[in-house]
Length: 117
Length: 114
Image (cartoon, rainbow over all chains, first blue to last red; front, side, top):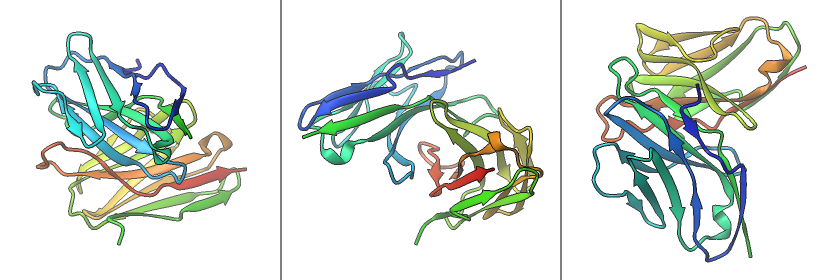
């Protein structure tokens, strides 16, 4: 069963505007981690931001912030002041905290973001 | 210098051929992973290894095998390639003792099976 759901296959956003990328997850574990990765057209996977299930505050990294709503099981990525270089595929991922599975990720299908001038 | 390297970067092969994709890392991480990426499906885990003596199947291991030759090397083999194994393949590493346990990815290998 799909554990990470990204419902937006693609989005257009204008330069300098903020954009929110949706991610919902499914787990019965109490301990887990949520990640966002960026994949530009060149193909590499770039780690952006992390949120732990026990973290009380939303994670922020520069222009990236994670809107973590634990009860709703959502971990949306917010990119503020979009730049042309933000055009990329964005993946949400989850690492569950089960003993053997610690470190194993599951990824969503991704959201393609295009930033327009 | 890249911390996680993959060779080859691109490969075109024919149905039935045996293919090996190699991954090396200089990060000193104990955990290594192989994923494949297909459009609309994200990344799916093929195999993972938590140390040299530990190999585990992921969600789509059929048709693939792996070898962990050393802490720094993890190879993926397609014993008899078929066209639906055409995909972008990623190797990744992570460290048990890192704060986030995030995964670090290689540049990817684009494999085409004709």
